[in-house]
Length: 378
Ligand SMILES: *[C@@H]1O[C@H](CO)[C@@H](O)[C@H](O)[C@H]1NC(C)=O
Ligand SMILES: *[C@@H]1O[C@H](CO)[C@@H](O)[C@H](O)[C@H]1NC(C)=O
Image 1 (tube, rainbow, N blue to C red):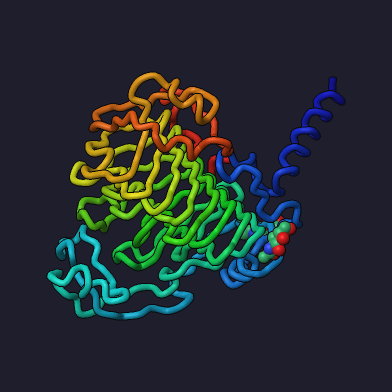
Image 2 (image 1 turned 180 degrees about the vertical axis):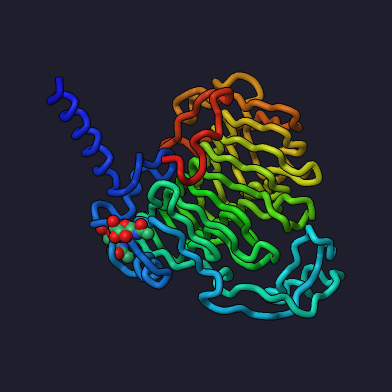
């Protein structure tokens, strides 16, 4: 009996090291097969400089975080003029005048003579290809600076960390996770809180195959563009050739762009939980070139699930799930709604885009829970 137990636990250990050392489980959906740093020996950065160096060098790496890396102050501060597009109330975000934004887009907004912000937040840490960045228990926290994958970076796993406190007073003060020209990226069990602008941004260039799973997108903040404790800028998916599996995430206390989808983006939104989205705002903003298959999700207290005037296409399983089977090889799951607005579209005209791809499984919306979401849970 004893030797049998040893045998099975050895098998389990083996199975988890096949995909990627240090990483728990494997990506489902579009980024299935991502290996990150593969079997590279684990490294444990002890300073912010060391973390930056491991993430940016050209070696495959498994980088384990067992402490907080606080970047605030590491690059100094800047004082510059800005504006107050949403008023000067204590709950309102103000805006840094990035690239003349205050003049070009908010010309009528009151100008602010001097905002002081932390420079580290402005641009994320460069992450190169073939990296696994994994937090240990609930210890892996990066404060004051995000992560940036760009210009052809491929094969990255980010798991079980929190990214927090990027200039939360000021729009344009930094994004938590940026993808701009990537392929095969897996973001799993990541918590983002108190961010200046986007929690996760997949910008205009092609982000390729991406899986975002079990993340806690926490929009609670003392400063927001809607001046009500809920962050407006959460998930921005506007790439030119993006396939995003978005599964098992918790998106809450936001007031807009959660997500914004357009460009040329296929989004499979499955088994997520949207909760308490500001009644003045919305969850989905869906523009031209955004294609959304939404199934098995739970919406609670989301007054406006999709902003009026959507020009993208979406399918929400309004009736039977069977229309999915010829495209993804199985029926779709219905979405569930509690004290929430309408989210209903029977348009299957775009589902051919999902054919032949790695598609995440779906459970019934009734089984969606937040118990295992965010960092510190694996
Ligand atoms: C990442 O790994 C792949 C496959 O081993 C390799 O071809 C590529 O050059 C690596 N990239 C970097 C930046 O090391
Ligand atoms: C992190 O883990 C490494 C390797 O086990 C160890 O040397 C280091 O002391 C740990 N750091 C903290 C803060 O626990």
